[in-house]
Amino acid sequence: MTKLDFFFGEIFVHDNYIIAVMKEGITVTPDLNDVLFDIVTTYFHSKPFVYITNRINSYAVDPATYVETAKIYNLIGFAIVSKNTLSFSNTDIEKLFFKKPFVHFDSMAEAIIWSENLVLNYNKN
Image (tube, rainbow, N blue to C red; front, side, top):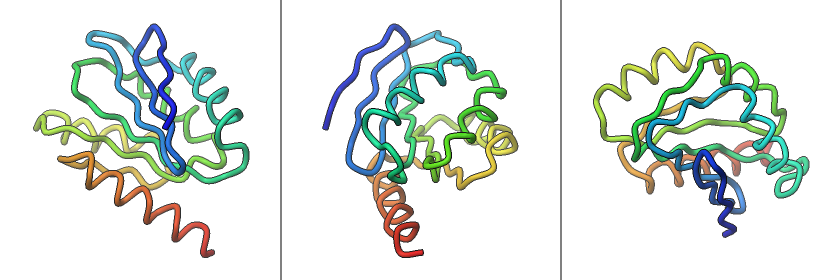
């Protein structure tokens, strides 16, 4: 596991997924995808992976960000981990902008298992 620190939060890079923890009050905008593209190029090359966001802090996401993020060809899924009920309803809206598997989980363990299975099944095909 590799930990990367940025002005907007932390990214933890694992073999088949990354976990992002954004800072309180930040607004995630499409220009932050440049950082994600750099991480993908460095750590995943053409290998499939899943993006997991651990929403332990409150922050905003510009929906246009998902449109750009979905263009990362080897990003095969997106998971949100949060116990906040408002986050559940936001997920339904956010899914509209991301045309790949997009799931909300209560626990990180569930998100990791889903991610590992998604990558495993993707590699079988």
